[in-house]
Each structure stands twice: as structure tokens, then as C-alpha cells.
Image (cartoon, rainbow, N blue to C red; front, side, top):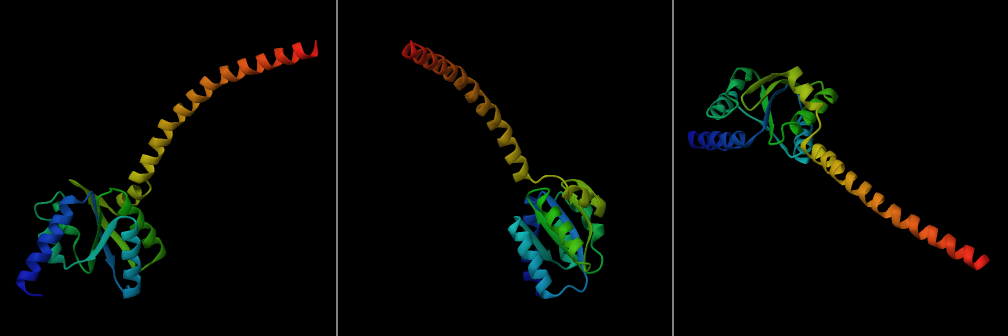
Length: 172
């Protein structure tokens, strides 16, 4: 990789990190290409990205972002996972680390905040943005359903009373 390619890689990664809500630094010693491909597929399905980077290029890309504090985590063979959703990448990374002993989480960061591996694991237990949206929508729809039921109940009762009077008059 020549100097212009490195500069392009650093600037592209820097732009992606500017837009990220979460960055996770991982170690993947001994993983096969198939395992890395599987991890990338799972990350993409969750709306995240996973990139194996050279430590020096990653350190350069972190400069000027909210994740500059992660610079000390880049030692040895590392890779980064990032997403705009602050929970999605953590969920996928933690689940994959539990299933594959060759993959481990070194640490991570939210904008302006450094997390250790326990912090990333705690973050993965939170509901994702889509789950929170679904819960909020469910709470908003529930009262409307109850109001409709309450409004329909008196009309139904009046209809039953009138039907009872009609049957009583027919019987008499």
C-alpha cells in the first residue's frame, strides 16, 4: 500500500468514525477468513461495520474524532467494529465473542467516553434503538385502543337494552 492509498484509507475511516455512535476495539488472533466473513455478515445485518486495520492507520483516523481516547487500545492484531446505533455493534460483538474464543473485545468508546470490555458487555444488554422505538410505539397505541373500546361500550349497552325491550314487547 503506497502513501496515497494510506491517506485515502485514513480519511475514509476518519469520516466513518465521525458518524459513528460507538466504536469497539477487538482482537481476532487465529480467526480464519470464513470466521471473519461470518462476523462481517452478522455486523452488516445489524447495520454495523467491522474492519481489520493497521494500528498506525487506525490511530491516525481517530484524530479529530470523538474517539481519540481509544488510541491506547491499539496494540497487537486489532480490528474495529462501529455503528451509528450505540448498542447494535456491542450486541453483535459480545454475542460473537461468547461463541468464538479466538475473538475478544479489548474495549470501546461512546462519543467522548472510554469503555472497557465490561462496559461494552453492559452496553450490549441494553435494548437497541429499534427495540426502543417499537416499545414507544406500542405504548402510544395502547391508550388509543382503550379509548376506542370505552367509546364503543356505551353504544353497545344501549343497543342491548333496546333489543331487550323489543323482545319484551314481542313476547307480550
